[in-house]
Length: 424
Image 1 (tube, helix red, strand yellow):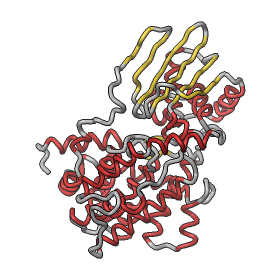
Image 2 (cartoon, one colour):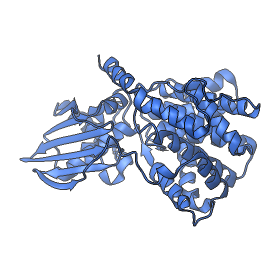
Image 3 (cartoon, one colour):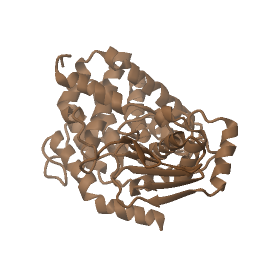
């Protein structure tokens, strides 16, 4: 792909928009970010705070540990951390620099009972509204559709920022609309790696570091450690184990940052760590690893663009399939092999539910990577799941569209039922 091709710089912008560093699960961190903005706008510690969120935010913030809160979980902990110790200018690393004495202050603020949490009645799929009051003043801060997309800031009823929202979701990014698997392969195979290496070096460093921390076995359910101890040091085991270990640590409050994909740290771990492990095993050049990571990252974004940021469809499945595509490229696979790897992977586990961020996400990640590797091995053997078999359609783009329809439209009722079960 030539640099004069409009897709070339669009694909770079997509990577820049999606591959961001974040500390902690991105939904509670987005709450912390909105809360930090609210305190900054109010100019003092709020005397009362109301947090109104969409059901998917409740689902993804309910059971995950918030970093730098001494092991606390949930929306109130995220809000308190953002108010007491957050730096809004750091966005998804808003509570990365919490000092030891501030952890006690966060706990004390929560004990005051000034934070209330409710379901936002007119919410979009991704919706966070913070209403805070103190010193005779009030503020409103709203984030919608994406984790750092601030659409409203108001103080004492005076609008400081207001963005009109149309449609159901943002989802219509003109750059993302240019993504196709064929275009991604062409870009990854021919791009000047100097244009992407900074983003990818950070992804490699951050995600590898938290995976290694997860393998200590003291985080979450220790899925990564269990896999290595149970099944040995084969590269296919390491691919699953390292991705799972990163999630083990992240879901349980580890303060190390993760470079995310499609708004999710777990998906960022899943698209990158299996590819990194295979690159080590194969002894490939750094340049080859960059190109494989371009494929895995962009394929995941392409898949999620049809599903949406949050749904009942487990994002680890699409990310796992994308890692399989990256591994296929590392091994010298052509576009046809990559297409079949993606379709096979999607056929195996699509429909796995997302029931919120929590330690069991690590096990789902391991399963997703395993399915991707199975799909890749099938493709190498000349075997494939074909159009007309279940939800699989003829052609990779049609299959992605089919899975997107399932995740975005078909699982809406499932999403609501999952939430009801979780809050009973």
